[in-house]
Image (cartoon, rainbow, N blue to C red; front, side, top):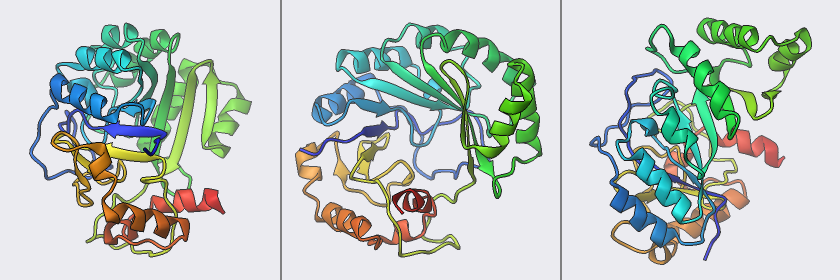
Length: 283
């Protein structure tokens, strides 16, 4: 059985914000039940040690977040959560008391936040970073430059942590900067969500999909990676089938061999420019 570095589980595809960065998904909105999560954990077995509780949607919205984190711990999994941070203060106790959590990524390129958005986040991060890695994430740069809103947020971070001129310059130059113990700032250029109707197309490229990761959508659909938020590359359903059956899908070997040779086989992947990030690393 393949061992994946990480498996994404979309515990909900529902979100409390509507941001220009995130391509709206057209699927019915729902929450995965804790019973369904346990079925997935049982079927995943030892194929991964790390769960990422997102594809689309805001995981902290889930009414059974505490129980899901308890299940992850029960099955020996470490959890990464990516959140827009609006509910961080509200769910702080649940997060603080979960031994399963490894890392919390805060997508600060979110929009429509309330006035005290960053202040509430700072308050919770001060405590949570005592236990977990916390990453302030800015993924909407253009040619390496922050937009006006992100610049304002970075300036608040600089003020909050009394960062030195040297550290400020480091933030300008580098994509991942350690602010202090367990606290990081990560930045990246805006990318296009894969869509066969978008303007980008490139048949050449490399990706870690299926080699290092798979993703499971809220209805149990297994897809090659966390960017297939519509389930276009449906490999099977892990709630109704087995992982062994799903991994026998001939499309998987075709995709993996294609990526190994930097030749993209699936139309959706040809319209994904995120693969360029991996291709640069490979070269």
